[in-house]
Image (cartoon, rainbow, N blue to C red; front, side):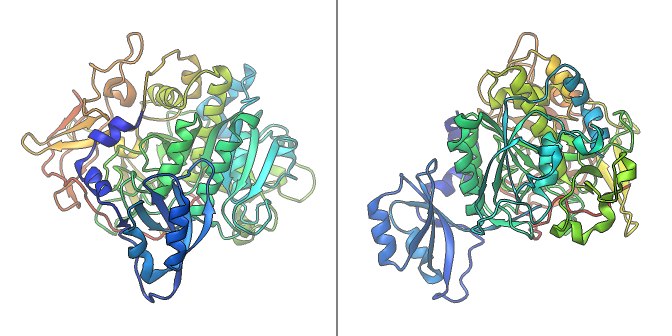
Length: 565
């Protein structure tokens, strides 16, 4: 249950919630008479009283939600937003923010879905809702498996004008028909629910995405929707508890739908001097969802040479300091479905895969290459679908915990006892080199291993919310703390002889990297040591309860033309 987490976790978060009538910090008034669209979270379900008072203050309801009765989208003069927030039944007001988005044969072999396929585990009977830019249902790789389509952009079309959603859908469950099975998706037997929330530019408002999540919950029983894939993100502006997008994904999770979210592509961002730490986007900052970072397969089906992608966003999350991402999966140079004439197809013609590469007939390319955590998330969504097919009684928390527990822990070894494991990536365009450290803020619990997850019988009781990183200034030790403020160590068990602790979930050799946050929220360089006894000793600086980081503009995930070396 999420009540204990909300009650105990962070005092600043609870204090912010207690102040009724809060307006999000990113809301600004330029012309008080200009109509603005805002998301209003109410202290209780919507009522006629609210509608009446809203109308008297010059506002109008734009959207209401079946499964989120305490959330409404309204237009109101900018100058009246604070007045609206001060109404006694209003909890929080935020802008209707914009979200941006957004080789498969090696990916399937690397994570183990080929073995699943050979054992008749294809995700058959499982519904995966792809909330994205739409799906091209005419592609032979998806024939007959897009069972439902709906538009939430207001444009009245469900096809993919951007070219992102179809690529994502192909990674989740493309059949590989156009390539004689070479570019088969992770779970080629799933039912796909096409919920178009992003337009031809890859952009969509929070309200579009919330409405799509609302519909996925409503369609859950009809199509056995067990997974929602969100390969998108926007900057974090407030605690997860106040963010309406985070609240929507949590509602889906509590309804029994696992939500898989990309971490973001800001891992190279050093604009705030953080070396890319603290750049996980929303709603990947929510502690319930499973947040996915990106790995590089290095052109081989084996895992031993794989490295983390330098652009993959790193934790901890802003404001709440949750340990994210939760897991990493292949996301660099991923071959999946092409949408001819789409925005991405026109912008990056050299990303088309020639038919001769996969034995295709003719000159029309059926496949397209993209890179990003947007491509890594659907790999995990497909893996989750297979686990749900294998054991329909598993909960989202149990699948998240099992994927994290069984994730591969083998990464580049540390050079010395005091030097953390690292790798260097080169941007093919600029030639700039980026160094990444294999700490829990970069690779989470480890590298997705579907075979290990299928072979596991571990069952985690209760919640698998991502832990919080807490520093004890008196001892300079950083602890990983769960929702009840109990260190995730050997004393917390959730299965026979299995520990939900750092030595199994994250691995003994995973280090924190060379950066920790100081009291101003900036990064201070310090020595790194292996994570042990649930603490990291040797940090030279401390962080504050609510650090702040420079916000980058929303990035178009998954549109990186060349990936990286």
